[in-house]
Length: 117
Image (cartoon, rainbow, N blue to C red; front, top):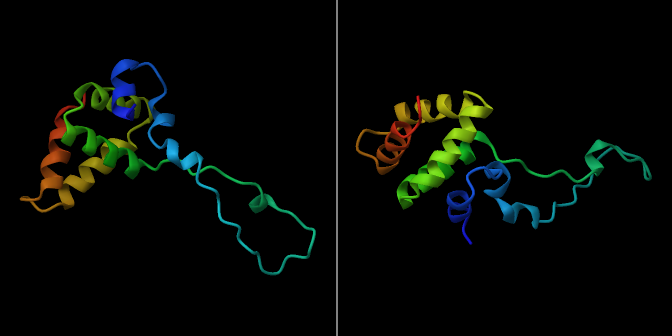
């Protein structure tokens, strides 16, 4: 089942954690540190999970807009508004940077029109 279908079925579910499920299965690369003595461990030794960035969420919203998944898009926009203003600030900044004739700008502007006020 796609993420968009899951968002449409259960809008109250945690959309933030469901968008990039494949990231959980990707093993983190081992980085060989310089200057550490053998046996010492630090914070870098603990595996960390990559969190989706605000740009990832803007991109996901554009993809939902393009595919016509309006319920999933509304749920994602609502969740992002609850998190803060970073999403809308980035989306507006990207809209201002894209050329007027680009498909990305058209999709981004259409997505911004769907944002509840």
